[in-house]
Length: 317
Image (tube, rainbow, N blue to C red; front, side, top):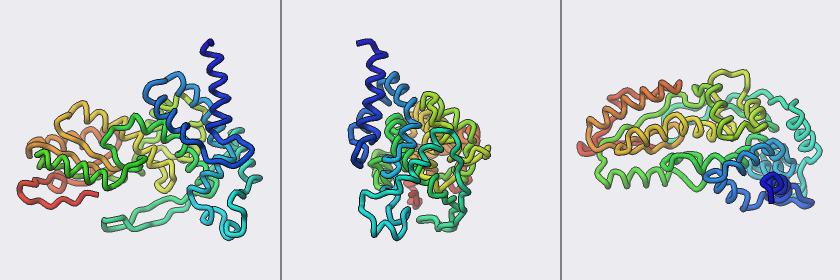
């Protein structure tokens, strides 16, 4: 059968069986993630084709309902969530949101700023709380984009990824130390979410998502008026930060410094080296590379380098 015929069948199959266009309410099936993980690695034609129908999936009312469940029914629907049938959702509102997205008329609401305590650290972190429609769309986009983008991420990028946690980062660090890498560079990307150059991020996304029409929606949710920074507090933002650092830092580091191992949890960086001089060189390379990506290291060299043979105490993650 000619490829074009297969393409049309595949497109219909995606819409019917993967993206929840059914008479009854169902969660997207497991094979959606399994196929996308495979396509992301090996099947560029199929991935390109799938990207062209992403906007329809992002606006699909039944997938938006799944997003509400993932955020929390009570949090999104209020007291009515306790009274309504578990399969009840505000379908009229979701269909109106679908029309706005597909017509290109959707505009995000104003994001509300709030300060929350930093986990395990002193001080507060400023986040931006999106309006309900933006929050639902962002959550749905994460469900759709993660299995497409995540498979090609650097293996030791740990934060905000499926089936990975702080425990995996700590276990990786312990293994590297046990292997004799007793010199560490531990640092943060200063104001990582607030400093990402937006145009450069969108260029990377255009490439990885094959010029998908969904990019206009992503740009709107990330606030198209900003030249710098992505809203911390939006479900989509950690994935975007991983995309940006994966492209500009992770794979570059692994190629340039294969003997000096990088473990990254979002904006928290740890590098494991054999000698103190290797650690000093690594710190300089980190600063230089991040600066070329429009980012900065928060710590000075004195504060970032640790010698475990001298009983230095390291607090990472």
